[in-house]
Length: 362
Ligand SMILES: *Cc1c(COP(=O)(O)O)cnc(C)c1O
Image 1: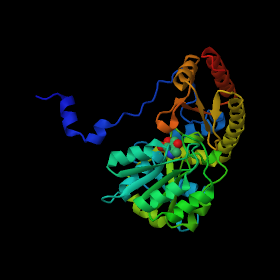
Image 2: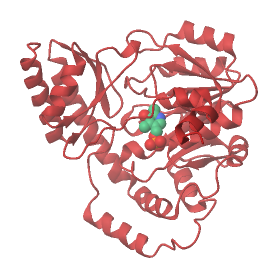
Image 3: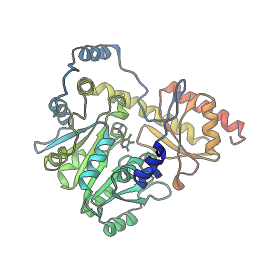
Image 4: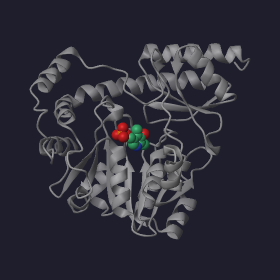
């Protein structure tokens, strides 16, 4: 009888065997600045409100399959016109998958820029869709001529642009993004995972372009544990995409809790404002260090480049601070730190100075 592992390697698709599993390090006891989470907990009144809602939730029943009241709350928040709405996902990752599956005609291409959010490429691989990554310029700005040329050549069915970008944090000039939308014959999805920390959004431009959808998640705004993302745009698109959404993909508890948190959206946005203030402080501190090059960010994290990034990552970890080390040719020696509370930011900066001194870099 063959072993399970020989059977698995015989039966599984080559692309799946070649993948490396997404590695999430053990974070117990660390100052956790690696995953773009909101560092603030909710006020006790809001927690009690959630506790009551959870206590009375009917978890023996399937959730409202259309999640109508949550969708309405989000549409109101965005001020969407009548002919537009939202599609909910179990995190926006799930929506990337829905979009890719829906547009993956034989030979179809998914295009994004690189470096950007790795799930665009990963999900293309999962579902067997052709993927093209157009390199950003060396400072992570859009290389517009190269991007437009790639769009003309590849005719992608689907384009993802993270706005602001992850892992670089920058917001591309809106005019350049509009040129891409205008040039594209396929669907363009602007991924606004970091909308709460950014100075611009494409929500208000949805009505201008029939090939545009905007995707958002609540993960970076204090609800990472709920797993809730949405696509906003024309009902003509969303009605079709709804057909691919697995029934009940958003559970009873996330629907309830998100509904409550959206009533406190102002509170979450105030937390985001605090994070923006601390981002400016952190940016300033990093830019004062000669050995460090820090990149401008409109997200809740900063990308920086420093020699011996692996040693610095390890030195920070040894001092109790967990950040993210990036890999890939365009991200050599790059580290990404999430903006935490002022106290966490200060501890990170102190640990960084100590590590640089220890390595004779600072
Ligand atoms: C974090 C992130 C997401 C995914 O968010 P989830 O809703 O937690 O799945 C999507 N896009 C970008 C650019 C991100 O950084």
